[in-house]
Each structure stands twice: as structure tokens, then as C-alpha cells.
Image 1 (cartoon, rainbow, N blue to C red):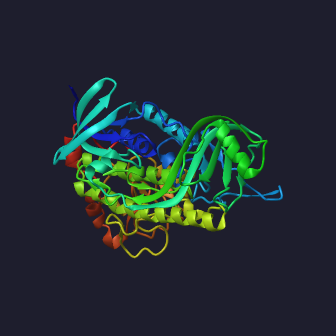
Image 2 (image 1 turned 180 degrees about the vertical axis):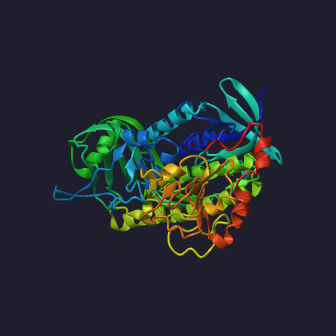
Image 3 (image 1 turned 45 degrees about the vertical axis):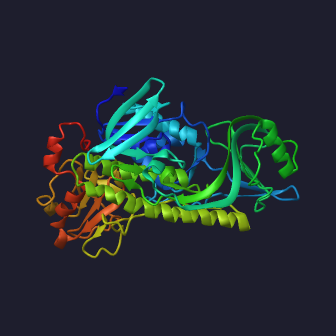
Length: 511
């Protein structure tokens, strides 16, 4: 059995959560491997909706332009009536664009295309997914995790400082840890299939028999492909025929139309809808992310998006601890993300119940994930009685600012990268908070690096905002509490001494 050198993080599972974490760790200079037991990439559309908050994450990870080019906007929902006519309406409520929300509506892109773009980005950063490589077993101690991997080349042992289970709803890592996965089966079984078909145009998402769970069928053109996604609830018992002929028959029986012909099926699956949440996200040096930690019904398009944001929350914390930040920082991962998953799970289940009882698919801001935050996190510190503008734990909105030469500057451009961002309203803070690895210090005001003529940041004189690497406000301070900035940073950043002792093996990437 081959012995391999120690790594910092072993990621098991190369879905959206695993790939997000891999990209984030790669740009931070962390030594990691990402393994996937499947022999080849996932081929289905499954999680096809990217919410606005996930689009912001993908901008920071450097893939949003490619994602937008590969996908497209949702078409209107065309609801067919029994008289043969139909009504059309938007699937999502479309708010007016504003500078603080650069991505204001969900984007459609099949999951296999999303993950393809993510693997391409990972390759640009010098890494690849090891397909056909399974985790056989593992054991941990105070120093790390010993893992046994198996691939076509045989078995090997790997020692990693941390193991992340992003291995899906049936996670073997969660089971090995003995973590309970309570919840319930929701009494709905459904099929989803990616198919080539004729008889329907691609200008709408076609819905037949809305509100009738025995006859409902939805057929959606998949952006970026020539496929349609077929979705339908099915009886709890029996095996559905997911062949082209079987799907054609089902559609004809439910719609009364013989002109809709499924010609071929690229991918198909039958599944029972569940709502479950892991009791714990971490045991020692092993952590769970994505579907391994929570599973949702597909209503509202929350599952993949929540998984991406799990990894986005975990990545910077892992990198900081590996570089010498206090290990207690990792405790905040479960503290923050498990509460979010509980809320999202409740929303998804509520939307499913509403669809079963009343029909209808229209979605509003509650599904955009822009209002998700961590106001009660131990990392959220509001100092100085800030009453307007973003508070600690809230998503930092984008803003249109002005550079020193009068040029327009987006706040998100300043925040993009692996660093914390400290926005100061006065240069008097510079002696207190010196620039350091992992921190970008930016002054805002007349004669400063940035100007905020519309007061979008709501920075009072002498105040400051400390923004986390994942785009949430970590802390706010006023002039009277300015000396506390350094104390806060000591909880979340490695000391300068720790950075110098890392010898380049892992550290805070350049800002």
C-alpha cells in the first residue's frame, strides 16, 4: 500500500460543495486533495437554479461570467388550462435593479454545466478532481486524520490535518462519525429527467395540471443545452419507466396530448423528497458540508445554493486555522451554517406544502438568500450603537463608490479576494490597525482612497466596518471602541509570527 505525504485538507465529494471548497482553498494556497468515488462527473441537471447570493459568491471565485454565458434566465411559466388555453407568468418576482444587489434574479444553469465550469476554474488554479477514488475508512487523533483511499491504481494511506465530507445525502463519513440525520420523508416521490423531445417550444416552462399531485407534469427547457427537464410526482410504490417511451406515455396520460414525443433520455432519476438536518457538522477534525449535512425538497431551489455557501463559509476558516489562527474559529462553522440550514429547510418544506395544497410556483426574495446572515454568531460584534446601514452578521451590500481620481469603484471589487476588508472613515485609525497578511485596510472619505458621496456605507466619523472574506460584516466599531479592532482580528487571523513560521506550506494568500 502506497504511503503519501501529509496534506492539509482532504475533500471527499466533488459536487457543488466540494468544488466550492476546493476552489477557495486553492486560491488560498492550502495543500489539499479532492476525491470523488464516481468514475466520471455527474451528468444530470438536478439543481438548475442559482440564487442571487450564490451568484455573488461565484463572482468572488472568478467564475460568474462563465456561469452566465453557460446558462440563462428562467423563461415564463406557462400554465395550461383544461380548455386547452394557457396563462403565462414570471417564475420569480423581479425587483428593480439597484447598486446594492448586482444580481437580483435567479439564473438557470443545469448542475452538470455549473460543476463543469467549477472544475475548469479549479484546473486554472493547478488542481483537479480525482475521480474513481473512494474513501474506504478513516481514523482521527489530535494531530489529524488518517484516511485510506482506493482507486484503480490500488490503495493508499493519506494523513490530512482535516477531512471534509461533502459526499452527499447518503454520506458514509456522516455515518462513520455516528452523526444522526433526523428529519422526515415528506410523502412525495418524483422523477426528474433530462430529455430530447419534440412538440413543445423552448420559450416557456410548461406546466400541466398545477396543484394536482397525481397528474402534475412540468417540462422546462434547460438553458445552455438542447434538452428539456421533465419533472413529475409519482406514486410512492413501484418503479417508474424512465425510458423515452415510458416518459412519452406518462406525459400523454397526464396532458392528453399525443404530440409531445420524448426522443431520448440523457439522464433520469426517481427519488423520495426528504427534509433532514445533521445533528452536528463537526466531530474533531472531520467536518460535513452540503447534502452530507442537510437535504431539502427541490422547491425554491435552495439545496445546491445552501451547499455552495456552506463551503464558502468553511473555506476561509479552515485556511486561517491552518495558518495559525485560533482553532476555535472552526467552531463557528456549525454555529453559523446549521442554523441557516434549519431555516432554509423550513422554507423549502413550506413551499412544497403550498404547492401541494394550492399549486403555484412563483418565488420571491425569500428564496434569493440575500437576507441570510449570522447576527447571533459569536463572530458578530456591533460596537458603537450603529443604527443605519449593514450590521454585524449581515451580508455586506455592494455599493457604487468613487476612487481618488473620480473613477467609479464597486465595493465588491474592493472586497473580492481572500482577505478581510477594513473600511475606515478616518486615517487616524492607521496607527491602530496596520496592514497585515489577510487584511486590506481602505480609508473612505474626502482625500481618501475611496469616497462615498451618497453615504451608501453609512460610515459615521471615526467609525469602521470590518468585512469578512465571505462578504458578511464581521464587526462594526466607532471611535471610542477603535482599540478593540486588534482584539477582534486576533480571533480570526493568524498572528504575524504564525504566518512567518508557516514556511510557505500553507498561509494567507496575497490580497
